[in-house]
Image (cartoon, rainbow, N blue to C red; front, side, top):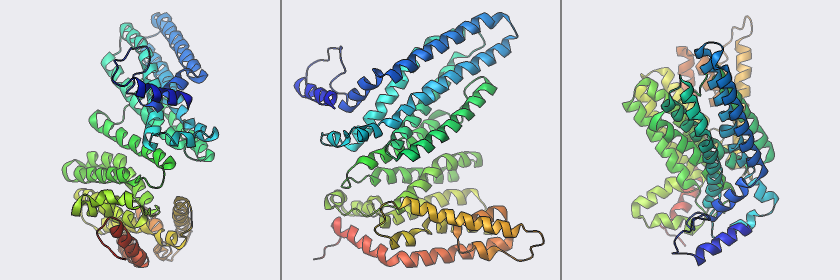
Length: 477
């Protein structure tokens, strides 16, 4: 904290003076400077950097000594596997996962409230911590380049392809760092679960590296950078929302990103091939689903200053407020817009059929199914766990249905078991697409959707009137 205060004072005192070059420039964020100084001087970074250099030196020595033994192809594959395994462990996991303590460390030291008293917003705090980790990743990556050149002189290595793989490793490390910073704002049990998932992902990547002898790339070009930017932005925004005051409209950028992702799915369906659409829907459609669920679980935030910014945009601004202001009511409108865009892409790629109609009706009904129960518990602090619990109950219903349907000699029809539970019906549809099942589940999805919307219609209208009042579209005493 003292470092950040001193740097801020230096910014005020040295404004307009040329940079001397012996310290960080004044235009850098104080949070970035503070985190860089503490991070680079820490023992964790020092030992990670030292062990990385030792591992790469030993790798280079064994590669040179083993060049006379065995076939050249086997040597290149084994050497490449060890080289990229070292990089994945250090650059892709160890350094980015230091972000797991980024915000948690501030809370343990009771420094978060002091940081909030400065002129730094929640976004600048989070981005500064993330940028410091990415800067450490780039520093370590720069130290790796001589060993990459050495592999080129050993022969059999395309240095352009190696640099491209290294670039994608840095991009992946930046996304992992953003995820780690977000996880640092969550309880400890969630951080442990995240580390377990990343550990499994890292182990799978290492196995792929060992088998191929190089780092595989799933998505390349500008599309890969776009996907990485979307996920990184969402993680950082979620981290900032965890420490930001309620008066900030944290859902604005998230919903804009969600609409952009839904529009990308629609464009891929209308203009792309089937394979391109499947890739876009898998990588970009998933954030749309999570953002829609998050918007339905939001509590309304009634601050006139937050809504007044939309009033300055006239009619367009007031319409935007209906979609981009926080709260479950506007979240339902956002879900409708994003769902329509996504459905356009799917309908453009799939031929109209009872199966497609059942998938769409059940998906929409499954997304909004827990909403009435959430509204019945207005004092519930965290709504996401209850939402997940309701959907988990639907999974239990599907398990019961699968058990009954698979019993030897079962002659009864179990579609009635899953019909009232959209997620269970959707899973049943994926394993049983008979015409009778599709027709029944289409009707079931529509009935559930109508019932849910009927239950929430009155509170939704009340919340929307309050939103219009705050943005100035409606005045009342």
